Image 1 (cartoon, rainbow over the protein chains, first blue to last red):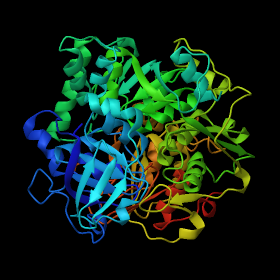
Image 2 (tube, chains in turn purple, red):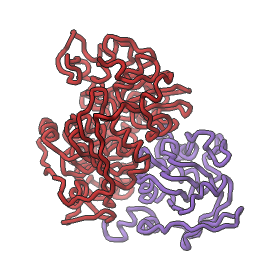
Image 3 (cartoon, each protein chain N blue to C red):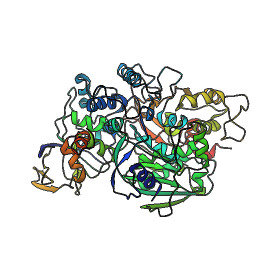
Image 4 (cartoon, each protein chain N blue to C red):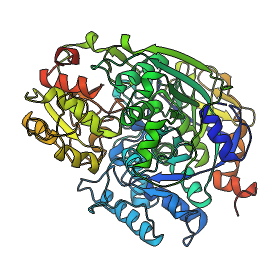
Length: 186
Length: 441
């Protein structure tokens, strides 16, 4: 896990489900073959309705047409982010598109677990509803050790919830590395 | 301890666990399918080695069901991967596409094949794995990484969930189904009301339900964010399981000291048919509040609403009538499909045994003008562009499936209403959303 995560924010609303994060039609691609793997970046967040894509204005594609990576490094969302299908392809697609962290008011359980155990993106929570404060395109600086996020446009710093017990898994890289380090598996 | 806590404690080798405890538990059954199976196998090999062996081949069940009847070359390639892995590991519980062993939707097939054993733990790479909890076991959905970890070790870490208890009392009126009950619950607690929690269903109305209807309740626990849905096993459960397998299991009884974080009692005799309006499963309305909404399509299928009794319910309404909108019928499993072709409507209705009037259920649907599909997940989750029943435009659909988020059935411009098979059938006949009480005689 990086000590600092900086980049532009892409803002979403409440209960963005994993079908919106990566639509089912694209789950046929291999997650390892490079030519297919990149398709997860191309189609990341492609089923978010246009009006809710890149709040507050909307109508902002997460990945520009024909591209395989996003301009945005941090996804900011409302509550229950990643609800619905258990597809691990969802946090994976965000990672392939170039996302390093998500800051949501809350997460659906399986998405959160997949993000941590697979080591795809760091799922932060913020007591303040950042989705109402941050605008798509704002530059954010996350200080992982301090547990804060700074919004450059507002010159304001917000406190993130401590990662708690999952920090050790994120620090190890994924659940396998964590289990090896703690002697669970060889 | 609650039912869920009791099962988790037993699988962690502990006398007691409490909500919030992080524990490592033994997994009794792991299930995967064609969408998440191939990447799970890749992670398994990456982490444990090319020649690694599955921790217990008899506990791994692979049920291809998602993208089966499609020309998509990637989807077909993924099934070849499953086939090769099953051969490599001599897996007895691989249900191959294109053979007589093919089953269809994994959650329904797990029940049919006797893998839902009371008191056990079952994990699957699918969020609707919570369906199996109808048999008094702990079951939940996980991602590929967690599944690969289980594949190699037979273990997984879980946080013990708090339990919410939903008690259904009274006698269920003939126009209501389990789907109405669970949509009501989801509307009450919201999409994240059950996050990190177990949803336990209790009360005489629950135990009056058939196993298939109980599965509809636990199936949609995930739509309230639940970690698992669970119903204590009873004689009905045992009879269902024993008719299908001789595998060993231990019945787990709820304990008197069980503590619940939330309790709600419903009188089912006072409940009404409901829908979930677009685009959220918790966007509940009484059917009477949306009656007359014009429709383009009806869909009957999926792990939620494609079981045998779901079709019996729909056929009761469709028999002798013609649908006014495109109506897609997709049996969840090949066993359901076979029964539709062999069995008819009994005089009394909901028990589909024996042919009355000489018509099979399949024929009733055909004569009503329905389009008949092959057993699979079908268009419940959209899928490849050539998927039977998938939306491609601005269709307004009423469906027996489980989710109506934007784009779920294919097109993000389409709008999906979720409802019971009775409500979907009544609406298909009228071409507008219709209360089943208006057509049930």
